[in-house]
Image (cartoon, rainbow, N blue to C red; front, side):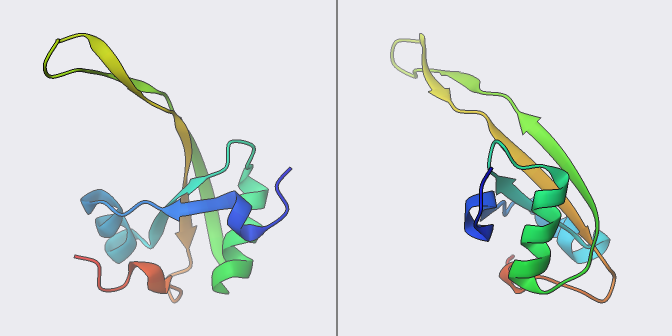
Length: 101
């Protein structure tokens, strides 16, 4: 099991949908380690950002294959990863997502 907060939380996922979730629904999206659980993600977010976590949803995203534009073969493959959607209390926010348009 991962020990450090930075081993569990890999990076924030910044998209149009995650920006909407952060501003309207108080939900923040992170890419997390493969072995991360709901409890480890909750403690990692609470210790890293000093916020109150209400709920954690975890999604395993599968690997995807893409076609090569020249040869039209299935050549490129992106790896799958695990994503966590963290719901915070209404008065809390994470400064990483502030000002992202």
